[in-house]
Amino acid sequence: MIKSGLFTFGALAMSKTALLNAAPAGYGIVSRHAPELEVDYWIDEDGNPTSFSLADNAGKWIFLKCFQSWCPGCHSHGLPTVKKISEALAGNPGIAFAGIQTVFEGRGVNTVDKVRKTQLQYDLKMPMGHDPGENRSRTMMAYRTGGTPWMILINPDREVVFNDFGINADAAIEFLLRETA
Image (cartoon, rainbow, N blue to C red):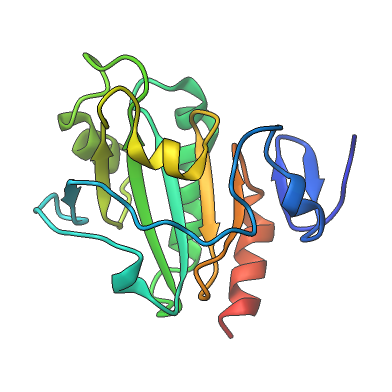
């Protein structure tokens, strides 16, 4: 099924209307209020301890990138995509970016030290968190993600407008530039 518009997963594109049904059945919380993040470990772009919350970024678009350090799709698509989008929108006061290692498998590999290694590998200028949860990442459970790579876009009214595996970087940049103009 091919759709046209703003967002894509692989070669499939989706309009804003189709966005409501973007995630695979049973996943995502599009059109719902974004729950606050419950992530205890955060570092800033320099690797220093920091914090990040939706409340602290009220009134902004918030782009969350969920990853695992050992995830091939994160390295081939997810992390390069968020790098492209965040670099294109750097300095835009209407948008906040954050990456979260959402651990749901490979706990011995997807460790807290890999957050900084991943941040440096992709030169990501954003807060990065580590969310191992108890048995599964709390972010994954709250946002009903389907694994990694996963991307979440939250509007200034704190409504989830995108919650899926992939996003078309160029279309997302164009959309966010228009929405924050």
